[in-house]
Amino acid sequence: MPTGSAPRGGGALHAGAWWLWALGLATAASRTTNPLLLGLLIAVAGYVVAVRRTDAPWARSYTAFLKLGLVVLAIRLFFAVFFGSPVPGTRVLFTLPEVPLPHWAQGVRVGGRVSAEGLVFALYDGLRLATLLICVGAANALASPARLLKSLPGALYEAGVAVVVAMTFAPHLVADVARLRSARRLRGRPDRGVKALLQVGLPVLEGALDRSVALAAAMDARGYGRTARVPPAVARTTAALTLGGLLGVCCGTYGLLAAEGAGYGLPLLLAGLAAALGGLWLGGRRSVRSRYRPDRWGVRAWLVAGSGAAVAALMIRAASYAPGALQPSVVPLTAPTLPLWPAAATLLGLLPALAAPAPGPAPEPATSRPPLPANATPGPRADDEHHHPTAQPPPRVRSESDARAGAGPEEAAQ
Image (tube, rainbow, N blue to C red; front, side, top):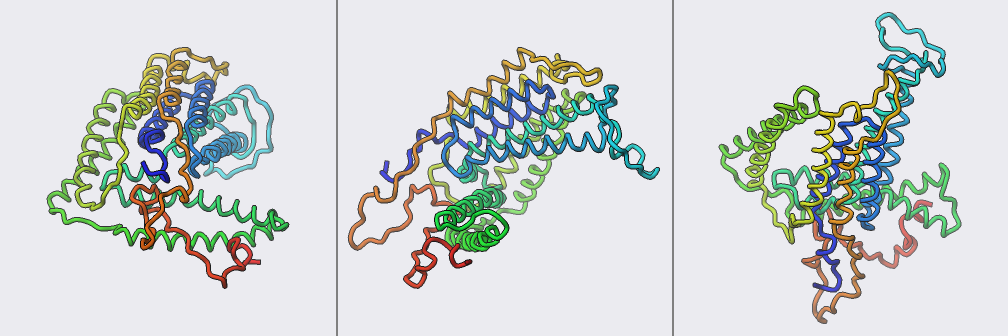
């Protein structure tokens, strides 16, 4: 293996395995409002992220999703306090001044009595939604967006590129702001306040525009957007299978989530998945692209994805025979208990902490690459991780006339 490349065997778990694991935990969270089980799911996801995430920019998104979950929980409690709750309560905690509304707004109130039952119901509901967001944040922190893009079917490649570009825009923006604020502190200038924000905003905007132009040039140079000729019959079959399969997946998922549709939900979901996969396979024939070192779905990926699927399946099974343990009663208000079997099933989500490979070391500097011949010009390496349509070309060298902005575009804005 070349000296300048990162080892791929140690940290090369398939990105789709992390998403399947996280979606399994999210499915389990959607089946319960028990705060003890939801807290256990959050702890499982957080521990796996802590021991298996890398130092990549996207790995820092888990903290942002934790904060977003807290914001969602606070908003849900705010609506329960000021706009009421659908749960009738008898234990009144306090009473707010109520705003009179016209007769056509019956059923809606602003202010009034706030009961303990309504607050607890809002707390359970908001915690469940926050857990779903945290599970998605775990997948974002563990799965590389670029490697996930490589594993997408050819039919979804163009949409996947747009999603990856959108997902990587925010980390780059945060990194630019942190870099410019650090530069201002080193120069003895304030980095907080409205004035500092305005002086940092222009260089950040300039960097974002330069990055978008460089990305467009890189995609154009790599032939992005080429398509192959496909017979009309194949195109129509692809559209029918894809749309029908997605409709079947939606109906089957609704059947599984609903209390009465478990009988037809699973067969409809499997049929929809089969039709959608067939449509994606046919649709991939129009996409002309090459894959270098595609990620392989190995035993470790099966274990990681299977642990999430096992947590979801066991939680769905527990919801059918012990609904009281997974849905604590609010009226009358009772203290939640921790059911042993669902809790043990949730702990299966810790398997990726053992089965997934440890994060590999960061790539060594470019100076460790073997020297080039005297008459050779350096070019992109075939095994370089940044050889990708969403990668940026190397930064251009500034001339002597640009020495004033050598530390970045921040000085030019002063």
